[in-house]
Image 1: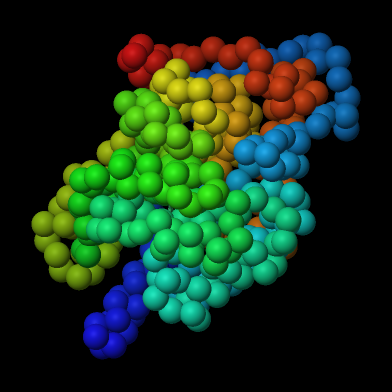
Image 2: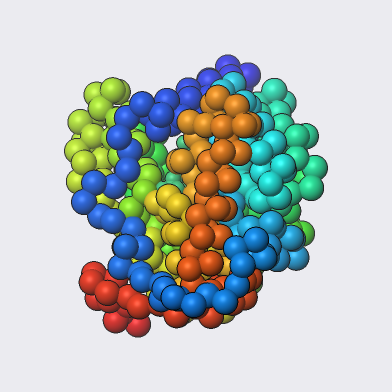
Length: 361
Ligand SMILES: Cc1cc2nc3c(=O)[nH]c(=O)nc-3n(C[C@H](O)[C@H](O)[C@H](O)COP(=O)(O)O)c2cc1C
C-alpha cells in the first residue's frame, strides 16, 4: 500500500516537472490555429477626451476587487520547482493586486510537503484572489466533495477551478479519458464545497453547449481557455515521444491544433450564458485583455508568458504583469474608455474567420 502511494507521488512529481520543463524548452503553442483575437478590431477614437493617468482599470469579480481584470492562469504545484513558480507569481500578484490560480492539486492531497508547493501562494499573498484546482477526469474517478474542500482549505482559496481536458487525456501517456458523470460531479462540488466553482478548459476551448450545462448546474463562472496559445496535446506529445509510446505520439501530432480558437470560444460562450466569463488561451498582451473585456469577459487570464519569469524572480513576473496592465490602459485610452464598464461597452468589429465562428448559434 505504502509502496503504491509512494509510486503514485513520484509519478505525479515527475509529470509536473516534465510539464514545466517542456513548456520552458520546447515549442508548445498552436501551430496552425490562431486565437483569432486578430479578427477583433476595437474602434479607435481620435478624440478620447480623457487623460491617460485618470484611467481606472479596477474591477470586481465574484465579490473580489482586482486592480486590473487580469489573472495568471492555473499552472503548477506538486514539484520542487513549482514551489518557486507559485511563490514568485503570488508575490508579484499581491504587489499589483491581481489574481492567480494554482495547478491541479491532486498531488497535494497525497503528501504534506507537496501541499506546500501550492499553499506557498497564500502564504506569500494574503489578500489576492487565489483559485484552487482539480481535474474533471478526477471527478469521474470518484474524487469526493470532502477532498475538494481540502484543496480549497490548502490555500484558503477564493474559488475552486475544475479543469476539463479531454483532448489532453487522450494524448497523455498516463491519460485517463474518463468523462462519464463529470457534470453531476461538478454539481456536487457546486452544492458542497462552500466556495464558487469556476470551470475551465486547458487550451482547447469551452463550447457553448457545455457552457449552458455548466450554468444550469450553478457554476459561478467559466474560463474559456481556447486554442491558439499553449496546446496541451503538444506538451503531451513530447512526453509520449520520449516514452516511445507511438500511438500517443501520433495522436499528439494529429490533435496539436485541436480546439476552438480563444476569441471564438469567448464569443460563443458569451452568447450562450449570463454568468461571468474569464477569457483565456493564448492571451499575450494587454490589447488581448482589452478585446476580451469589450467582447463581454469579466476577467482575462494568461499562463505561459508568466512561466519563465516565475522561474527567475517575483520582479520578473511583475515586469510581465505590468506590461499587460500598461497595454490594457493604452487600449482603453485609445478607445476613450476611462474605466472597465466603459470598456465593456466599447465598439468593436469582427472580421475574417471569427465571423464564420460567430454565425454558429
Ligand atoms: C506549465 C503549465 C501547466 C499547466 N497546468 C494546468 C493545471 O494543472 N490545471 C489547469 O487548469 N490548467 C493548467 N494549464 C493550462 C493553463 O491554465 C491555460 O489554460 C493554458 O495554458 C492556455 O493558456 P496560455 O496559452 O496563456 O498558456 C497549464 C499550463 C501550463 C503552461
